[in-house]
Image 1: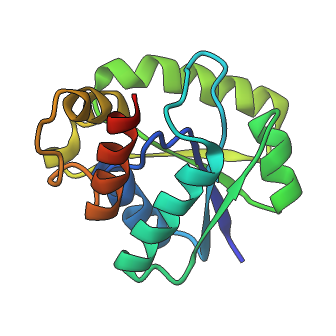
Image 2 (image 1 turned 180 degrees about the horizontal axis):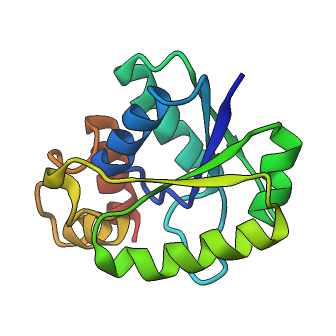
Length: 162
């Protein structure tokens, strides 16, 4: 089995993330969407909420070879514990490349047997990220084209609480 890990904060999961999941699931036997907290970000949603949103989106896509998990610590350690062979990362624009390239090289130094696979989303998602979606939601913009309807509802609820 060729298993891959798609790590991220997914705060919240966007249609761009889902596009990467769809592409990756065609290349690997199993994709694990691995939710983590980035120490440089202050997530809006708890890990449990993010897992719930991902699960809902995956159910809508009927992705039978996609699982969801969460982890803490070094990504390469998690990849090895899961028996995966690859890390999947999405690249929207050249601005993503420099950071992702550095991370891939660091991960290769730590775990030479783990490959990083870069996937580009459909061009309609190249500008899309979770920060933009949260900002649009904060100001009451219609975000249904950027996230699933379930995630849009969760975002609206969260923004009302703030």
